[in-house]
Amino acid sequence: MFNQAQYAILGKTRNIKQILQFRLVSRRAKETVKLLLPKQIHNLQQLIDEQQNDIQIKIQSAQQAGNDQDQRQSLQAALDGIARINKAHIVELKSFARPPELVEKIINLTCFALDPTFKMQKDNWKECIKYLNQYNVIELLKTHDISSISEKQIQQLEQVKSISEQQAAAISLVASSILIYLKAVLELRQSQVYVNQHAIKELESKVKKEKQLIDELGKIINN
Image (cartoon, rainbow, N blue to C red; front, side, top):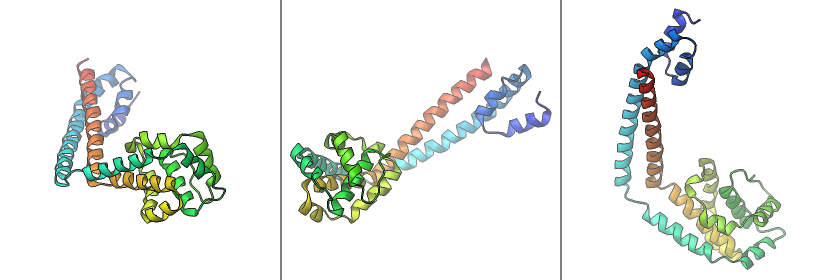
């Protein structure tokens, strides 16, 4: 059985899961937890208030930044370019035994942007070809949810900034079209409006879960 010192430690914790587990120990523990829960609800409400304040600040910041319409139009234009790539273009791309370094880099980045488990490395054309043979990359690009791209993937995509579209176009239509797409994705994902909107959605999701938890704790108190 828990002693008074352990009860005191429990009263100081903010770990709600630990508190709720403790109430299963005994009837006394259950009643003790009921006494502790109002403080936990108060802490949660304070957290919600802070997060809602952050949401309002980010909304104002997003409004001041304007909108990301230009970036979205660039992405749509890039997707239109992707749509003009046909099977013959892909066959031509895969015909490279040892492609120019620039082409390999673009396709490497493309595979990684679509699949975070894809291992990017130098002299990786064989793996790129395997991916191109296994998946319809063009269709994947056209339907890819760019909000699912992780920060780790975005960091790697930073490399496209140093690649010239003119150089890519002189070598491969496919590589050039995909490069334009990757640059558009990067620009949109890094726009202040997008960053704020994503942060707002995350905060709203947290607030919703915390409010649900408050309701659950209230039921425990009244049970």
